[in-house]
Image (cartoon, rainbow, N blue to C red; front, side):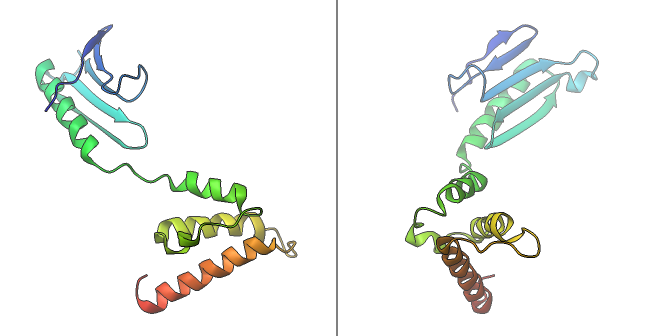
Length: 155
């Protein structure tokens, strides 16, 4: 396991394994008010991917724990940005046809997409204006897919 590139940062020690000087990072900080067995606080943070922290009694153990946590986190798959994907689709839903395999995507994504469509086009009071034809087709396709998955036992 490769060591992290630790550098002194005032009273703390910090490492930027990806080379970026802001995030992601690993940090070791001394807490003089803590008991002797937990004076060193370690933190690893990779936004929208993983984070971990802990306390140990000495600096070297904190560095070792942070290094282990960093490389353990890097082995996990990068989480999907469902909100970003849904926002991208919502930006083009009225003007461009969606990709054909979209309907076979994972349920959490399809559910988030249906929720965004309902919020934008259907939850507008008692007499909402009818949605554009492309939106109606997507809603129909999603509804049919949800029904198929429910009746086949997939959901």
